[in-house]
Image (cartoon, rainbow, N blue to C red; front, top):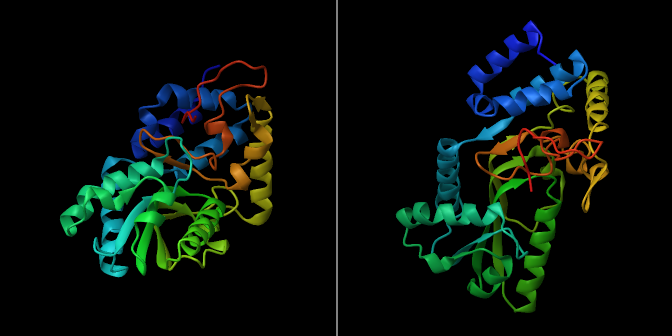
Length: 278
């Protein structure tokens, strides 16, 4: 299948304005050919144009904002505070990378040492002084449910150790919908980027429903179950998040629409998604 002139022209304009797509030109063209109707292709264009893409320069700016928030707003310092990735598992996680990236920035702003940065929540509970502060950092917050559980878990572990500590949260990007969760255990929840749902929040209600049905028709062409993962769980993004977010060279969140990251077609054959995810 070849792209018609109107689709080709819109692709060129998209790549001029979103250079990261140009580096994925073949994959993006395959995504367009995955669509069977002009309406589906138009929706894909709309969502990709809304993508929040964080490159290395924007990441630098985001990290600076987080460091300034930690230092100037929350008054956290190396004498009474620790920085910890929002992670309890043993698997690699982008939150640990954010904690690591913050080391030289905070070290330059104050006398932070490497032993005040941690990659697992439990380590922060042990390290924080009684009456101190714990800053939880992450790359992306989607529904807010994992964050809510992490805050509750941390609070419980502090109680077990007979400690008190103020909890703060800082992330590079977050969905606005995460604010709907009860995150009152945190003194503050700061994100450098707040994102809307890429369909529901960009169209009038009656049109949004139509576009959601179009997206569901695209999902029908994907394999329903791939290994331990069931497509139904991630339809319209995990918990219907409708995210459109990509961190340069990163692992995109499952809150993104699965057509952008699901590995297999309905017949079981492999596809090349726009932003592969593990």
